[in-house]
Amino acid sequence: MAGKLDEKVAIVTGASSGIGEATAIALAAEGAQIVIAARRADRLDAVAKRIEAIGGKVLPIITDITDEAQVESLVQKTNAKLGQVDILVNNAGIGVLGTIDTGNPADWRQAFDVNVLGVLYATHAVLPLLKAQKSGHIVNISSVAGRTARAGVGVYNATKWGVNALSEALRQEVYKDNIRITIIEPGLVDTEFSDLISDPIAKQRSEERRKTITPLQSEDIANAIVYAVTQPQHVNVNEILIRPTSQDN
Ligand SMILES: NC(=O)c1ccc[n+]([C@@H]2O[C@H](COP(=O)([O-])OP(=O)(O)OC[C@H]3O[C@@H](n4cnc5c(N)ncnc54)[C@H](OP(=O)(O)O)[C@@H]3O)[C@@H](O)[C@H]2O)c1
Image (cartoon, rainbow, N blue to C red; front, side, top):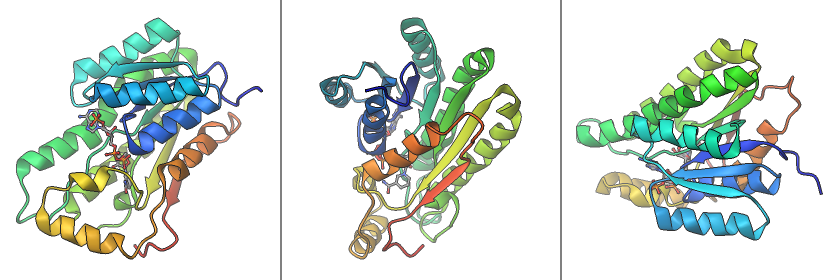
């Protein structure tokens, strides 16, 4: 059966787990050839096997999104091996939680490097290709935290606010080249994301909060991404904000 993304090539960053993994599989199920990028080789291989098991074509490329040269190489290798890039899902991201007075600036730098500069590096690398072919779609994974600030979340809020701002500016810069930009803003999703919270008070707060919320699953977000990238060319889904029904803010 024909998929809605046959003949398309998609790069998904942070595809070794969680939302990125589910998105890579969902795009492959619609027929796209998928390049999966992240740092953990063993996890990328496991995702590649899942994609191959549904008959998909996949190319894992180990990439640290904070390294501009590696990101440029990711895009160039994709173009060389698969001939084009149609969709970029800027999904790689990390959390940084804790109040600003107790925060560690090294953690802040890493969060901005991954969540903001990583998005910029990948976008900058694909834009010449998308502009030359006069089509393409960039999906940036932001967060409810890009729309609503909360105590103890300020630095993460700032990174995702940044993603929203650069996405809207980019949309205005490239719409005349027929390039679409979508921001996805999930609420709480059941992934490994919050396992990586280092601040003990923030971790406890997060665990308490999780008891009151039935979280989204990665596939819920992947479905939203598939929706956005399979609309007719004249439709640009600019923003999708998705909370669990039981999430307050
Ligand atoms: N889970 C939530 O509640 C939630 C809510 C809203 C938004 N989000 C956003 O959703 C996105 C995906 O997160 P997730 O929930 O799916 O968490 P996750 O399972 O922890 O996935 C994060 C992904 O980012 C990758 N990554 C981290 N640092 C990287 C680096 N330096 N270079 C390349 N890849 C890197 C990780 O791969 P490697 O470690 O293998 O490199 C992993 O594949 C993030 O942007 C996050 O901010 C999550």
